Image (cartoon, helix red, strand yellow):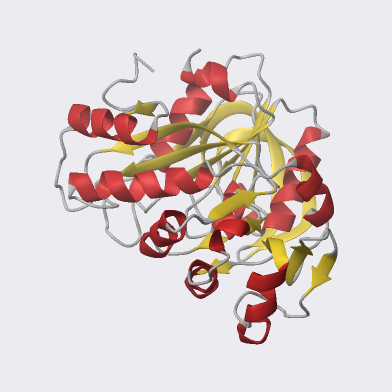
Length: 338
């Protein structure tokens, strides 16, 4: 099954760059250009994408090109400066830092700057809204620094972009990317556990060995000191509704019951731990599971850093594929093979 063939199995896709200048916009354009003409697509971005020049590094960037029939959502100010002909569909109540968000349909293809919803809740509303337009695929251009776009609560599938901008040391780049891919691939919890915790939005909760739901009455995993003993002594499962931190993970790692407890988070975007803390937790027999999971379709690489350092593309793709066990593409160099 081809890269595009995998993507069109799903109703929504997030493209997430692990760092700026890892080829996210290039990846977006590649996908948009190769989607079947009968596939109705809508696209937005959580940041500002489609600029011809990077505002930080001053380097040239690929602009976003849309073709006839595609839908897009962007800030009103960028809609006014569009370089395409479009039909206005909706001016929403959603707002970005640049004003109201406009949704339109492309009549004659061209270039556009994208800046749409940024929070997980507003992105979910955006996906639901474009689905009412009978769109087959909703695409969100995201970023690792704002992982809400990659949450399975927002999009069903995911493409990661990585490269020399993330690290010019190839072994370090592979290791860091592998860790993110591992988090994306964390096993989904059993249905019985998902049913118990799915609707809980705040706090830290436990499931006792007798099957009783326990509310630890704390706002987040950051305030765990007073519940540490009962957490590790009484529970067979612990659910952290918010961010999972090193401090919380280390507390579970240090307990004698670490092998007896299943640590639950909503999805991988809630995990804010260092690789060192995570590896120690796993080494001691700890288990993390998620309530929701996205399908990682591929990793795309940009071997060139903003400073002009160029890694060996073939070697990078080979090492990454061996490490992450999902398809890895340099879509600029091998665009006819993807």
